[in-house]
Image (cartoon, rainbow, N blue to C red):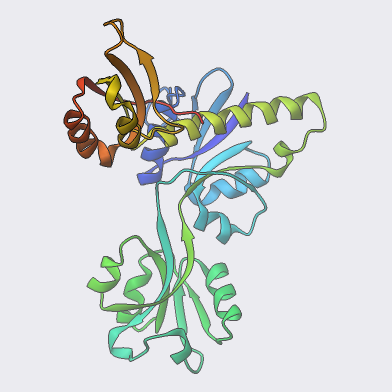
Length: 292
């Protein structure tokens, strides 16, 4: 049974649980405070802090885990990035107070203090751009540091930049783009024994299951009966993944049934175009999984 390290709280935890449930691996625990849970016959979930998951995975305490890429990079531990899960998207950015007059990294002079929860990444970034700074590690709320006189600059996470603007901070540069990732210990990707092969197979199946759910999100399955004479035009309306599936309708050959996967954002226009072509019996359904 493979152990999967999952965040124990916060938005990442909620999104990870939803993803596993949609993949048929619903978290089954004895209570909200349980530290372990069943994820199906081959997987067991262990709940830890998101920032500790890279350590758990790299050290082999967990075979795989879900956490933010920013936390993986900050840890410095060697893990394998199996899948970008899409949620938890954010940026690690450099910001300075508006009144400082600093508008770019090139304008940073001297050895300013930089407050951050990500000292490793911050230090590496400023070394790369050739700016000497003094790193001031903080445990949270780095954006308040300049207002308290603790630091001149901050390196912190942002999703939209609104928190930075509210606190009169100007974005200077992006250090890292981050999102939630499925990561694995390097040992689980090397086929050396029957145990390793079983782990490799289980991890591959896990990745495939989660990826199929992610691929289905934002897509809809459209079915409609259309006049055979309009089939060429229908193919332009319903391109599908590899073109629409066309099935004969038992009405003497006047109509065919077409099936295709369509982006959710295009459904309104697709239905309108199908009606213009004389389509009837239009049906739109959600997709739980989508395999290429």
